[in-house]
Length: 256
Ligand code: PLP
Image 1: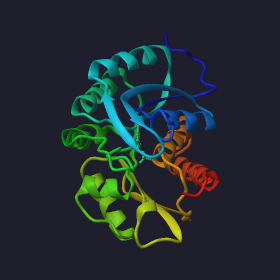
Image 2 (image 1 turned 180 degrees about the vertical axis):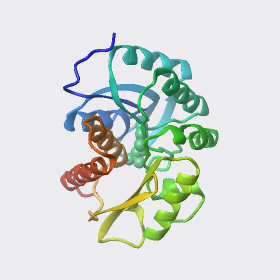
Image 3 (image 1 turned 90 degrees about the vertical axis):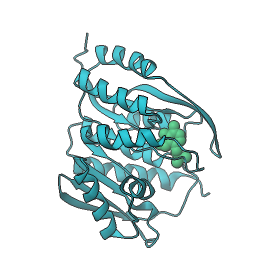
Image 4 (image 1 turned 135 degrees about the vertical axis):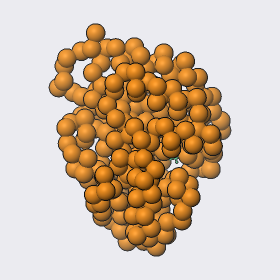
């Protein structure tokens, strides 16, 4: 039976498990709690990693993902869904099926393509299914620059190329695209993020903060956006607050 206590919104994160907690499900859960939500979670892949390196993965089957998600959906009213690592085509298709069957709200989807240590986290076939089948169902997708370059097949070196890539992803079926500009080569004074929400473009400017020893900032940002939406805030306000949340976490981290 779905519970009716709406005081703390429940957010479902569908993500990879990083035992070190730097990225993935544990980073999502930490962020969601800090942002006043109750996390519930399903694991797409058990990864073996620490802060330095990713050593390997055991991906879950579609059946495992289904068996994790259905009991949660039957018990809780899910306010928002946040989706991260989806390594296989099978898992992408299962998420698409589950979203359709359960009537869960349109998710915030972070395209997790590769670890910062260079390990592939999404197979090519999965990426194709992600673009054609999952992206159009998302409330928002949150690629960083390298991810947006891979997804669009274009190079991105400045703000106007960010806008063009976001527009391209909109044409490919995305409802809203947030391109995170932290990796832009030209800029080292400010961090620019560009939101294209149904063709309304908003630029978020923040200070660029010198690299710290902190992984999982993408997971944190998309989870904090999901938390804002779960509290009933607009997408733009959720993105602004999430950016401030992540900036605070980066400032608090040790230098690399
Ligand atoms: N592992 C998991 C489970 C992730 O979800 C992600 C990114 O979202 C990563 C690793 C990569 O994180 P990083 O690029 O911070 O190493």
